[in-house]
Length: 534
Image (cartoon, rainbow, N blue to C red):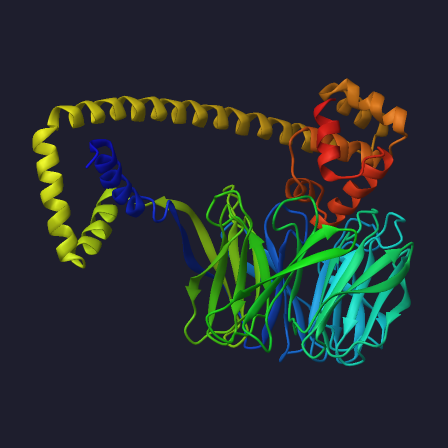
């Protein structure tokens, strides 16, 4: 037997076990709020602009909407928005009238209403539509591109899809479709990359997933797939090719469907089988195993667990369980850096015990050598005959060629030391980059706080990069677009910008689309290349 082949075989067999898992996600559960039975939905946000996380919740059984004011001690002070809203099913929080204060839109059995914030503890109730009943899909988006947030809703009761045009804080109801059946889920997508926000809807009863193309406030339907019986629908670029894909969760079947956007309104569908029939109420996305690929996070209402589809570099998905709840049932989940430690945590809402649970991200724990050796031992002990043969071969080889092997390991030790030095250098670079970004973030915060004085605001921005001011003049950018350009150039992502400006990530997304249009750029990649050259 060739000596190099034998050595390769031994080392490779060991490596299979050593690298069976490079990282394992480590999340510590922690109760952050205990409410009453019937808590079906929540949102984590800074509701009163005090730089502390608050929580807005709705309770189906108590007919209530509350906001929980966060404190520096990790406790929450409950403020009631209303206790007279029959069977609330869905809500969202945004500043719809542009006064800098968060408003709350809620759907229930009596219709669709907005609670306009007069101050932190007082709200004015206004009716939007009596037709939107039992709404389970609701999105805030600038449909008509007039620099304010409109509203898009679906109604299970009346089987309608509608958008509500924002006219200075009031809403004009415009019907898109009334031919849907038990419509369940709604998400936003720019499917044809024309900078107009399109809509994708699905239904538990209807076997189609339908795309509604926005053509300057009028919509045309386009069927993406048939016979999928989808529950939740999520629009995300899961393969990171700059096209937004569509994820559909299972209802009648045990299948996840991923519709990969090929461009020109063409989609390729892949199906992933779950272990058994499950009821997926909510789905989200994150890179949980830190491999640069987008993973899917979803709750399993029937088996009381949060589960994962982990995506590898080959765009293959493996099912895994993240957390078991035993007797609790999770309706909604959220992915957010709750504790501001620069990693993403998971927040869960339990409908039957009224609790909100934080799965605190403890980073990623590397598998140690003792665990690797143990796994290898278990494999060897289960294959005794193979063990004996391999043992005799290894002993003979080591006895005959110990000098060669020693030289090999000396060489590898040098390589390991070299790699370790590179790792240390990279960590130093990352630290410096992080410090630089934080300095930029602080500078941007100071700039934003002075935005009332336009001249001072523009002069501050020009100090960061004078070339950006020249581009703003050339392309006739608005103050909002100018500020966004500077933030992107500063290395901030959508989440950072939204947090800095106290707006939603969807608002930042819409502003990005307009900026691309102004700059005559056709993709996110083109925008990034343009900014690099500044």
